[in-house]
Image 1 (tube, rainbow, N blue to C red):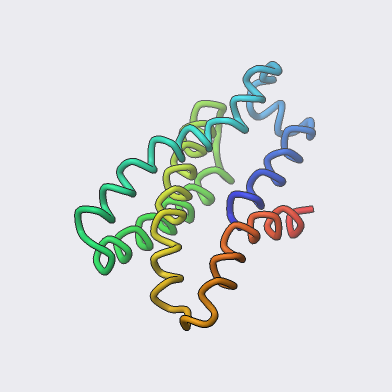
Image 2 (cartoon, helix red, strand yellow):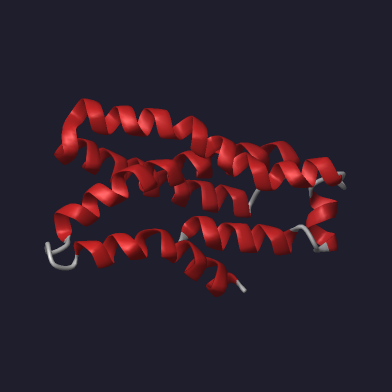
Length: 139
């Protein structure tokens, strides 16, 4: 849900004159990079996240992943909302991507542990569907 919400909100930021002025009037390729860097952070964060779950097992790896993911997204959201320039905004978007990848790797393990066996299929079905719900809330 965080990723879908973030994509919709950042898309609307890019259309405002104030944001463009605060970011130093970025050109089209820099604006495209703003959207892309969260996925680059996600790719870079997916490897440590999967290693964490493999190394520490389902129990402790899940706990660590569900701690790092929300921590990165919370801190990243706060710092991103107060970013003073383009470089800071980009670094924080990468941090958000890392946090989202940790949450996406550890989240299904948590859902498997918490969901009743009869409801597991439904819970996993909603896991990726909530990305669209985040986009709808942002609209």
